[in-house]
Length: 124
Image (cartoon, rainbow, N blue to C red; front, top):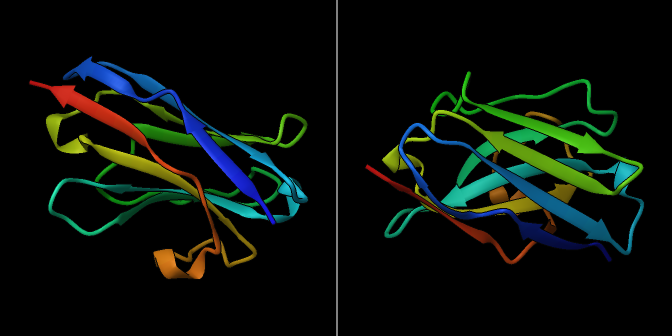
């Protein structure tokens, strides 16, 4: 079993930046694709970005491409999401997920392990 704990959320003004972290324990972190999803109030959870086991392949939703960067440090069992040029529409609870899936797996039900989420609020 893999346990995931997100941190780094908060309140930021539009145009600002935040870095989210996802600390993993209880499994072989380096064997999993790590991904970030988000869920805004009243909306379904949506895919943001995944990263492969070695960290050299990534993929982004069109809505965050060029602004967000996903990365991982296997020595620290941690994945990150650097979010720049934040917009009010980025406001959501952000979740990290882990699974032995293909890099382009964007459906949340395909990932068996999830964190509890961290709130990101972007004010205009």
